Image (cartoon, rainbow, N blue to C red; front, side, top):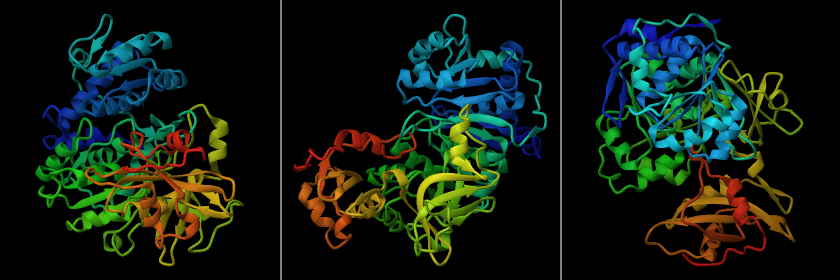
Length: 515
């Protein structure tokens, strides 16, 4: 099967419809303008830089309308875009660049020093700034566009299996891996998420997750372009600005639990009119029940879903009718995806039993960049091993329990930290919570809660433990608690349990104290 140039088709079908809104600059671009600018960039790559199909183009930048022009420009000539995580340190970025060996680096002016430090050790001779002032022997983005003829450049039909871009995993454990992102993954994600939320050309989506993350590109920017809607691109997440944009323009919204948490804690949350938004969804991690209830009290049904960088990302999304009656569920698998829950021997488990979630379908990645052994370990007989513990109820609704690697065993019993965290989030003084397993001479491992206390509240470690009494089985109750100012998170909003284990994972740290 082949894919075609969505952008050209949209520019033909609705040339004057607004495609992109850059929230930071206020600039708006119609589909005709979007396509022209992407064509100019593609022509520049091909004619000025002599970029060939399969060459990698790295980008180190905040979200912007330019980001998507670059993404679609690369598609037109078959170049592979590599979004870089701007939160990483220079040695971490060096690892990624050495792994993907890009021909060129495009960077935001805010990261000029980082780009300069990276280019020469890696040997990247071609560079472009998104700002107006290029360094010596570099190009400015608008200068590059102006150098092109402006003639429409149409992407030839490409196999759906061709690579469009590489997304490097967040690296919560070990080295980041480059996940191959094909045209098929983008297409089937647009279908798997677009249909359950009824995404149409009349919708305006607010896109704030970073574009080096699958959510930044595919929830819901690319699906929005697929249906011909309008995508607002927010440079970085700012709770106040996000509330304003939701109130003024957006009709459809996707966020991770951390985004929903920070929005709910903003002083303008209760007084902001959010009635314009007709669809709310969440993924990236399990959303605490107490937070779902906070939004429900405002009449907002947040639909939980689940996906991975390796799955495009959409796998699950709960339907609106059961968003509250099946609270905590990620719903059922969407149209173009198959799932299984298997035990450690690979046998399917019964409803109610826990096992590893396995995923299959045309939206699943073919593998990892230059890592055939890791690919073979992760994908067996077409089934992607997610590393997530899941269960399915008698009605066919799925629940993500936790990550296999985060589970610990206390006195022979499996403890899933997400279950404990869900209870902790119900405490009126707790703003954020995470649970890790720590060594224990009697039980093997026991839980330790890492807690952020709400401003103006006091809480002791014993108070955390006492709150869990009667709400959890005794072996699940944390035996200690420590207090921090904020939980470490990656760009997707996921708590970095590895960092917490490094800092608080020793049994000698008792977690005494009062906050």
